[in-house]
Image (cartoon, rainbow, N blue to C red):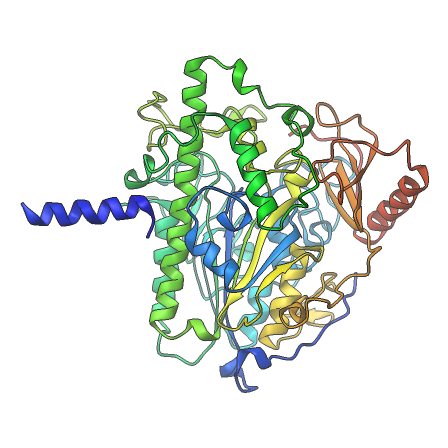
Length: 561
């Protein structure tokens, strides 16, 4: 039991005394101890956090009390080199399509396609109808399919969850919530099975409500033998940073010493956990986060406000973890857990924003009035709080940069494969990405991605690969050692091949040309080796050209975001 929960229990007690083509990899499912039939196929629970960074979980070095998610990591497989895209909807497109986001319809974010990308297949700004949705394939394979939370893959009727394979769905349609306590938005964002929702349910807080809604969906088929695919898509800990009252002060005072101290402590814990080689030094803050301020240069009032922001962020993650515990507890109490595959991940790295974003002149807080940003009110409903680039550098420890960029901090995310069907334990260091999730889940479900035609439409092939065999064989090769893993968004580029990586980033993040890094010895991407290893640089640039040619990548003509 977490410390703040114990205090709540004691309070109650006291009160009562005086609330491309893919090579399919079939797998052996003996670990599930089930018969080979539709009804014995595993249930699937997919949990996605929003803007949660690599080191924000206890299992990855954090001081935040994430005991339930940590338990999933301890009882299953914890991946150390799993990649998302630099932003949310491209990752979700990969997740549901099983292919690179440039093929899956969100090669660029909706509304931010450049002149060369507009009107091109793969750049529609939504999950492409040329991709068969994971949920729809599982639905056709006999799964009950449910989701609650953030969708962000298209808003017209033919693109919404019910049309893409979900039996029931209560969703936040778009990107940024203006509040986690209410449904106020610039425009209609929330839908219950396709019908607009304008009034928040009583005692609404996004993480709590999404979890309870998904559990209620599962209760509707509690006594059925039909397997389920349940998608819990939190909008936390995405800004604005908010938490229920009972969490707000759970971390009070823990961050008063600033981000430099916390980065060092997390780094040391990560080394003890075997996530980072003990011979690698902690990168200096200035070398991995050009936007982060020096803690010692802040005024005492600024330090208090920044510390409070991190307290609220930690409270938000803590609440998310308790909701994960809630749904896991439900599955265990109903006997479903033993035949359930659980996936936990984040959609990208941490947000380094300092102030509310203004996108093409329209503030995302335009409809919020009477905001109170006093220290005492931060994290409550009528505030709009960020934690800034300094704390984002902590969340991304030991990596460079953050969300929106192709630095490791923007791309590498926590990923856990667990549940009753997973009998293996330990770390997996294979390089994998969000596009590999759908092929893996289809393997577990004994379902096949369609060839050419799906539900009357022509579909393109998956390019992700199943990593299901890693549950039984940690030495299983999924991709060859020299496979080129490419990343691109808004002309910010990266390619990883083995332990080597090149990035192309503009100021203030880079020189607007290729830089070369050795991630094995420099995970923070602090030392550019391009001049020292020109042949290695040339090889990775050839890998980049392969990625562009084979994954529908259209670059050039930067779009300001």
